[in-house]
Image (cartoon, rainbow, N blue to C red; front, side, top):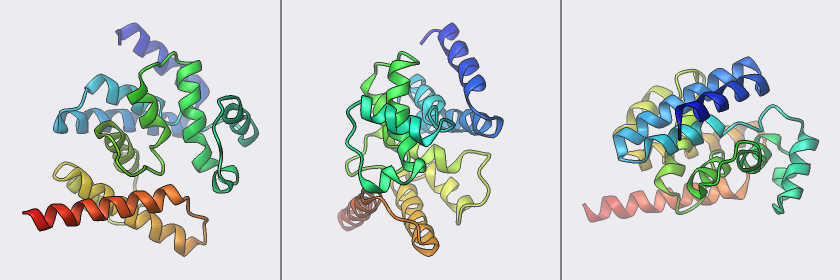
Amino acid sequence: MESRDRTKIIRNLEQNLNYKRFIHTLGVAYTATSLAMRYGAEVEKAEMAGLLHDCAKCISTDKMMKICRNGNFVLHETEKNNPALLHSKAGRILAEQEYNVSDPDILSAIEWHTTGHPGMTLLEKIVFTADYIEPGRSSAKRLPQIRAMAFQDLDKAIEMILHDTLEYLTAAGTPIDEATRDTYNDFVRQIHEKERSE
């Protein structure tokens, strides 16, 4: 990615996101690049996915629905009724159509940064985690411990994030996307298998 393309994308995001979301976006991009350096992922891909992960966050639910329909995404009922889930899929399409991103790794990391999915790639794990631990976050349970764990054992950090997310959503009575449950169960299984083999 050439520096002028990067600058153009950041300026575009600054114009299309509210100020709080823009600052969060920069934090996620910074954290994603740090995790990429730690785990040997491609830094430029991590930064781009971090920059664009919330590119659809500040548009209306109706527009997100339209973008997803036009992009041939099949939406589940939980997604239709929850913009917090919908923006990830709409963001994948916007990244491709409005920001000219063609790399499938980056697009997939944007799509799955909210719920995750079983069998996540390293880049998907990095963006998912960076979204949760970036410097502007302050209210999540066990945040200091998860931040430390993210640079020690990425899979364990994701298991902690998913556990706390499911606990929070359950307590709040918020519908839970099945992808989040499936992802949590997948990471629990992987961690247990790893512990048994050690």
